[in-house]
Image 1 (cartoon, one colour):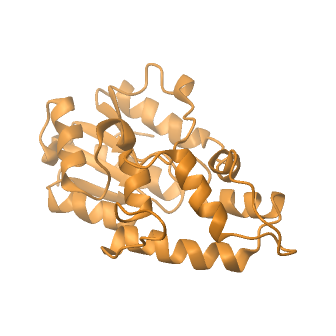
Image 2 (image 1 turned 90 degrees about the vertical axis):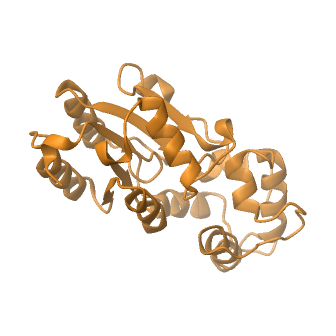
Length: 222
């Protein structure tokens, strides 16, 4: 696809505009003295089911817990309670559910070079949008002022990635076609949905690689 045809950049937040998810989680596991095996076992089932179409039902009767958290049908406080019940500390003790998600993502620091690239794309005349699956995050919206033409948060619109509907919704808000857009995410399944709809996908691994790919696609120095 020629870079001249692209008119918008749509980006994920966590893991793209922030430190990698696993880095943030590692900080939290250490700080809260969480038993790593209990965390990995739980999240392997819940997160894997969220993207592989299986059902991590646990105590929630509505389906996959992560689906429900991300689309807003399961309150964050209830997810925290259910997750805490599956975890234990390194000495076998209970994990407090209060503020669990805030503690999990406390190390989600912004990646300035990615913000710089988006500002450069916007200055170059492209539309910009943020498309994020929310886990009840306290988003740094002060960093988004003047940057994004639209912000689509899964729990606020009742849809989630990798469902096609939330991608279509984002593109429609921008008044563009999927073919006009490049989409950045660190989860391959989300990229697959975007490209199936006609978008140009960039699977984020490092800020340096993503910036280089965007610069080439957009024909802009980023």
